[in-house]
Length: 306
Ligand code: RIB
Ligand code: CA
Image 1 (cartoon, rainbow, N blue to C red):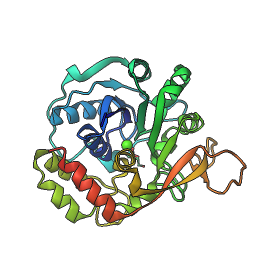
Image 2: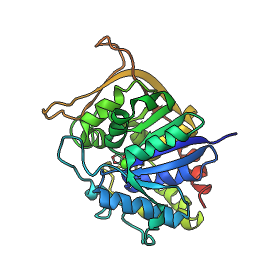
Image 3: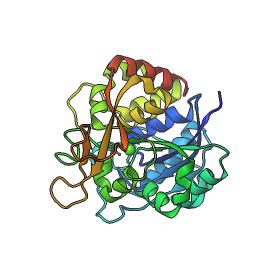
Image 4: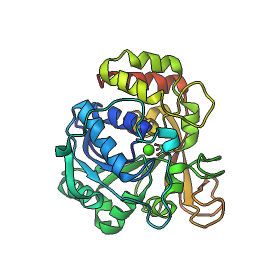
């Protein structure tokens, strides 16, 4: 089976680190580029975290710097969830700077897509700023995008505002550019994370998987997620799961539009499953996942990384 070429836009971010690790060691994905963007913490830290993670994992996927801030709005911050460094809980090695590709994300993404003999899959597990800039700069590339898997949005309640999820609220205008691009989009909203949280017992199990399991255990036990479940909601790993084992999820087609206004609902992912607006569907929303099935997949995926 040939591996699918994949580009990840990411803001590590503890759950980003989990998703990146799973992707790097999977049998089905050929990760071509890691594009670090501002998001959970500033770009300086997300870029350093991406390099540190690969240095620890001893993988050699090129890393490129993405956007320093949202297209229009003030930058937001989630260091209360991920720690000051953005990837708290483990003493990572100094970053291997030879992994850093000069230039900006939009151009590096274009280089990978233009040189690929097959369509490229995208995964967006942070704000949409870089893919929005890329789509605007290289509209001709859209025909070579296989699909885009996004962790973001909420069917109901948000985690940044009453109706706004962090990644979408971080750059609503960029998110709207991406959701209206016309490419195939699979969405992993907050609700999937609520269903598939990883229990303490599972964390203890991965801790025994060697150095990578140990590292993931330590950063995940430092993740201050906002729920009161006894485990951890690892949202970004859900997007990786959509690429590697989509059969785990129940999907529903919907029309999604982002609230780009300035009310207290700004950044809300307005998800219309019932054609209230009479608009064509533009996203497949993951609405259901069985926790035991996800956990079993998750443990097997992490065991490959050791
Ligand atoms: O709302 C969850 C998302 O915001 C995840 O991608 C997490 O890493 C943060 O970026
Ligand atoms: Ca993230």
